[in-house]
Image (cartoon, rainbow, N blue to C red; front, top):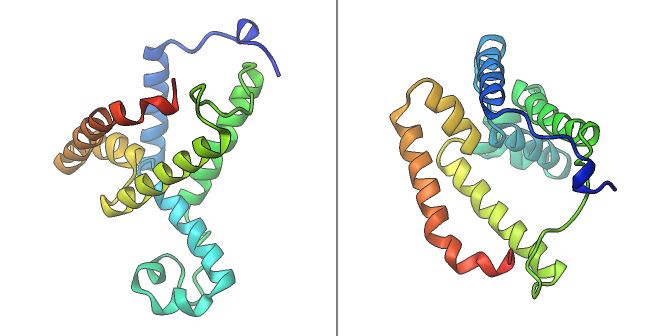
Length: 174
């Protein structure tokens, strides 16, 4: 574990934004799809479901489009983007001396409560992402890049809802 005083400074936001644009363009060019995590995560969940209850995957229309029959749900570019995002973040954090497993929470909140709240929030956001046909990165970055009106509506609604409920949940971080 390293202290924050020895970590390297963050990248200039203009350079970071430009690099993100190059990555987004490359994703469109190479895979035909933009960036996003919820699609890759859905493919991983379908692969796990195939191990536990393969007949459910074949009979359910939602899961069938991700991995029914002989089609492997892990043979999708979004799975590799998801894996690359995780590994790239870990490698970057390690080399920039910011890799530190921790649970950030308020003083009066137990680790258990914080983890339950994080899991519940992630589950709600994941459900919402599938309902909205994409996660924040998929909708805001990829949809915004092609000027999709629905993506802009999603992005403003998501940030507005976040600000609206933040007041009620701030004690978990203070």
